[in-house]
Image (cartoon, rainbow, N blue to C red; front, side):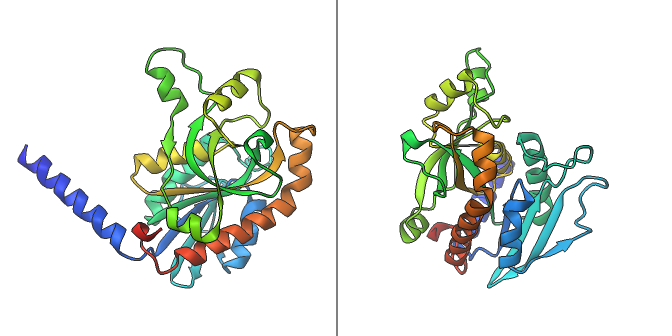
Length: 264
C-alpha cells in the first residue's frame, strides 16, 4: 500500500506545481478548418506536415508561438472518401487523444460553432463558455448505464476570466446529428442546455481521462428553437459567426498569457 500512497502524494504535488506555474502550452481542438483558419492567421501559425500522427490520417496541425504561449491547433481534417470536414464525436475523440499525447498541453480549448436555444437566451453571434457538458444521443435505459450515456462532466472553471471578459456561460449538450429528434430534444431539455454541438462532450471525456483541464468556447450559428431550418441558418451565418469566435478566443488567449491555471 505504501507505494500507492507515495504515488498519490507525487501526483498531488505535480498537480499543485502545474496550477502555480504560468501556462505555456495551449492545445486547440477545432472541428472545421473554416473555424480554425482565422485563428491560424491571427496567431501566425504554420502548418506542420510531420506531426508524428499515424500515417494516412487526415488530421491537420498548425503550430507556433504567440506572446509567451506555445499554440497548437489540430483539426480532424477532411474525410478521405467524401472530402467534407470530419465533424462529430468519433473524430474529435481520436484527435484529442492523439494531440494531448503528442503535445502535452497545459490547457485544452475546444473552440467552434454551436446551435443555441433562444428560450435559454441565445442569439446568433453570441459566444458562450460551457460550464457543463453532456451527451443527448446516448440512450441506455439501464440503471447507472443511463448516467454513463449522458456522461455529464464539468468544464475547467475560469471565474476570473469570465468576469474580466464578460463572457456568457451555458451548459453544452453534444450529439452526432445536426438536426434534433424528439428524443434528443427531451434529453437536451433534461441536460438544461443552452447550446448544442457535435464534439464538446467527447473532448471533455478524453481530457478528463488524461487529466488535462479543458475549456469550451462556442459561437452560436443557428437558433435551434427558431423558425429557420438548422442547416440553412448554419451555412448562412458560419462566416460572420466564425469572426466573432475569432475575436473572443483572441481575448481569452490574451487574458491567459502570463497566468497560471489557478488564476483563471
